[in-house]
Length: 267
Image 1 (cartoon, one colour):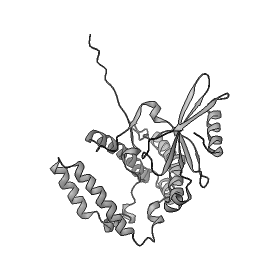
Image 2: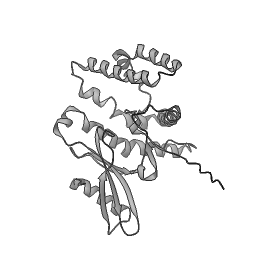
Image 3: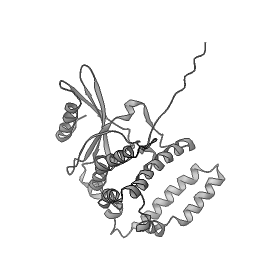
Image 4: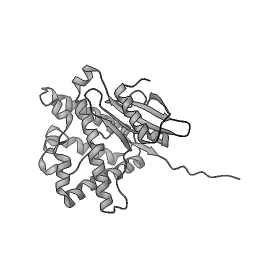
């Protein structure tokens, strides 16, 4: 699987910085069809006689029509900013305050590239470390949802603590990347509200199917449906709700799980 020469330069730099001299680079598709909509995932192995380094490169689509129809550049630039600036500051902040159970549920990012049409991030390949995706065709169970919410709580706790302990830094981290990239892209779309309603209808329908055997949770979803209109989300954009840095794409393919296997020997 070929990669752009600019991306090859990134990989060569990573190889050099990690002690590789005489090495080969092996590339293959890094995902199954439908696993990633906004980017192309390429699995990359840097290998010499003694060791190897397993990476995943997330790069932007180059198709002109796709790039014009989506805010792809803004999305990649924001993700690059998170890895190069926000997560580093979060890590430093937690270390300074001796957090016993810190938020660190992000892969190691080796290098990023922001050139137009070639946006990319090169990270450690968690699949080679026994991390797995949840099957997107199956509703996620309570145990996995709880694990995700715990990590979100830790992620948001860093924002809240930083706002209190170092408000100037938090303001600096957030002032250049506020708002929704899709909102900005489709701000003048006359059919935006209708498209939003169709989107919500489809998602709520899937929610009701997943909860069909749980009347209590179904009632909670009905209450959410009653308030979750465009007015609700517009209100949430008010300054009083700008509380934390959020993860803007909460779906199962953006989470990976590693399982502890208890082995019992029978004699």
